[in-house]
Image (cartoon, rainbow, N blue to C red):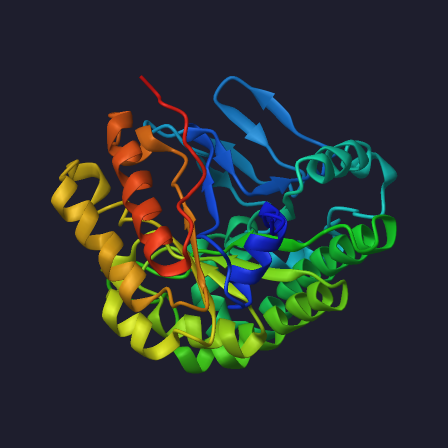
Length: 342
């Protein structure tokens, strides 16, 4: 009998649209996960009660909604201090002490190995300098914003290269976050994005590709144009949790076959309603317009149920089973058996 394909191969084939035997999936709450994340340590974090300081010097405070909180103190609010600012050092050995053990475990489970960067560029810029300041200074103090952005890019390129040097050929993909939009539009014009951000994303993505890794980007909001920028910069797969805000048909028409998608029933308009008909309709639209028989789609459950108002686990079970039916229909095999949550 034919050897069944490993989770690692299934993910790779889906990302590269080379006919996976089933949909790849991340649904940790249901006990199914095709990827394995490796831990890269922060060297510095202070926490006291409600406040924590990250290693970039950003001070985070918790909000009323469970989640990661918000930055309340921006260490480079005054960008003239950039000359004295110290970016995190990714050549430090202490960051990588637990990577090898994670790689061995991922290897035993035959999973797709992913490393992550939190706040890869634009979000880190405005965490350091402040959101309004950053948008204004992209126009009013372009040289300072270029220096800030390049410092962040250099830091993250160093991280990618250090991982490649220390663990050559062992990392399959890099995932990263940068939210680019509101419900209405992107924060900046596409022209400005291409002029300022495109070359900098390209540098980061090129370093990842040079290390043999796939590039996974995440963006919330209505980022219809920015996906084009990501594609030109070399991203392989884009994580979009609000497909209804984007327009499922429009995104499929413009981008299917040019980039792969990681998504889920809409976390804002659909999942919180608990309406199974709406959830099934979202999944049908995604599998019709974003997925293809070649692949190009990754089903990724949104982890923070409470944050989006989904407290009924049977909703996630229903969603999983719907994706499983579509997996069998499009690719031949259903999703792996899930864990019951009640």
